[in-house]
Length: 115
Length: 113
Image 1 (cartoon, chains in turn red, blue):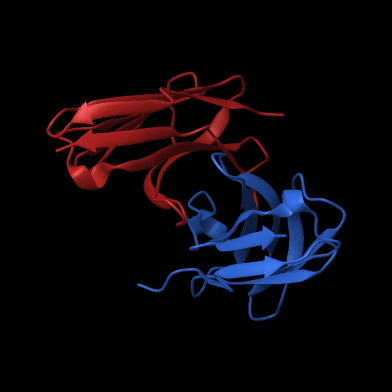
Image 2 (cartoon, rainbow over the protein chains, first blue to last red):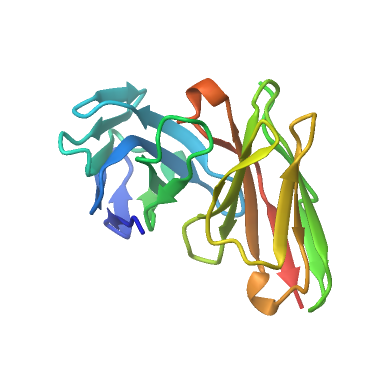
């Protein structure tokens, strides 16, 4: 089945620093999404990407859909303590455009921000 | 804005017991998805429903079944529970015409003793 490789697995940064994480896949995805999850809570959607090459921002977050449709990255600028959490990439694959298609998740990036 | 509602939030069961998890999607969303997340793992897709019909099936054990009702809420039924079923179970919902964006509920933490 499809697999997503997400890196890095963990990051320890100082408040105010920028951070970047990425996902690569052996298969093409039609959609890339980025989620943030706090401990014991559900993933919260941050950014959705629909077209190869698309670059989308949401406040201090910027994400891009790779041109090959097999990768995506997420950048966080000027990190703050509340950015702490686990960030997951997720791909929605080539099952067709009908609703009901599963998300395949990366392994997650644990972000720690030191004040 | 209304979000996905899941109940119960916590559930403790013994081995071989049954459990039923409920999911109420965001209003007007007609598609629901179930995911299982083990400790330190990423969410794994189990099953999804669109307009009350099963639309996709992942690595869901035969001991589990699910359905979507006429009001679009969904229930995940789990029988003959095993220790390994202990996990967070998430429901997500989406609009059929914008199914790319799945919004997750807060999850049900199932502990099997």
